[in-house]
Figure 1 (cartoon, rainbow, N blue to C red):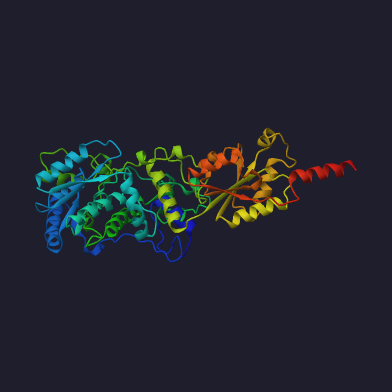
Figure 2: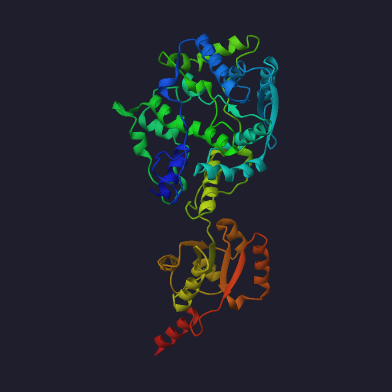
Length: 489
C-alpha cells in the first residue's frame, strides 16, 4: 500500500518504516533486517559461556568465508576481535571533517596489535557520505540511518582487500543490556513516547501521520509501557537493518554480515539493578576483562559520525512536504540528518520543478488568472508570494483589498500550491527560503536593468526567470480607475 505521509512519519519517528506493507511509491519495496532465528540462539549465563560460544562460531564461520571486522575502540568489537585468527583484516573509521578524540582509534589499534589483526583506517568525510547515499537509499527503498554511508565505505574497502563477509557487534547492546538510557528507569507511557521519538513528525511535516498506535501495542496498566519488549521489537529491527543494508549495497560476497553477539541469548533475565548502578553489559565487561586484563574497560560510546559538523550551516528542507516554520537551530545533528536524508530520498523518486511568482493580486482579474495558469503549466509546484499592504504602500500605491483577503483569494486558485508572504522585493532572498527552479514574471520587466540583475543573481543559484505577456486590456489599476469613474456618476 502506498502512503507517503505514513512512511515519512514512521521514518522520522523510528528511523525506519515500521509497517512492512506501507511504501513511499508504487513499485517500491523497503527492505528491513534479517534477524537470526530465536530457536538457534545459544543460551549464555556467564562470560565464559559467551567466550565458548564465540570461539565455536568463529571456527565454523572462518571455514566458510574470509572474514573482516569493523573494529572500534569499544568493548563489543574488542571482544569479537579476541576470537579472530591472526592476520584478519580489521577496519576502523577515521573522520576527516571533524576533530574527534583519538582514544577510540588508539584502543582499536591496541586490540589489533594484541591479537595480530591487520588494521586499516577507513577515511570518512561528507564527500564519502554523498557518494554512498543514493545507492543505499535505492537498495533499501527508503531513507537511511546516518551510519550507513560509512559502514558501506568500510565494506567497499574490505571487499577490495578480498574480505568476503564482515563481522560487526551490532547486537551486543540489545542482548546484554547496553542501552543504558533506555534501561535507566521504568517508563510511563507518555515519558517513553517523548524519549524515544527521534523527530516528532508534527513539528516538521505538513501532513504528519500519528505513530501513537505503534506505541500503544506496548502499553501496560497504570500508564506504564513495556520498554523491554519495545526495545526488542522496534529498536532492534531499526539498528540491524542499517548494517544489513550497508553490507548488501556494498556487494559483499556473503551478506548481510556476521554478528556473534546477535546469535546468543541471556539465559537469565537482564539484571536491571546492575545496569542502573553503572554496570551496563555486565557480562561483556567480564568478557572484556578476560580478553584484555591489562586494559581498563572502555565506557560505551555510540558509533561516531560528525553530523553536527555536516549540518552546522544547513538551512533545512525546502520541499513542499515540509513545514516552512521549522526551527532548524533547535534540532540535533542526527535530527537534521533525518530531514536531509528524507528530502534526498523524495528528490530521487519524485523530482519536483518548483515555480515562484509574486504580485499584489488586488481586485483579482483574468490577467492574474492567466499568469497563474501559465506558471503552473511549467512547473510541478507553484509558490505564489502575495505582497503585504506595507510593501504595496512602500511602492507608492494602496491596495483596495486587504492583504489577508488577497492572500485567501490567491490560495483558493486551483493552480496555486502554496501562498507565502512577500514582505520585500529581494528575489534572491526569496530563493534562499523556497529554492525555486524558475520564477515567473510579466514581460513588461524584461530587459530592464533591475531584472537583468535579478536574472544574473538567480542564474548563480541555477534558477531562471521566465517572462509571460500580460493579458491586454485589463489590470487592477484600470479596474480601479473605472470603478472610481462609476462612483462619481
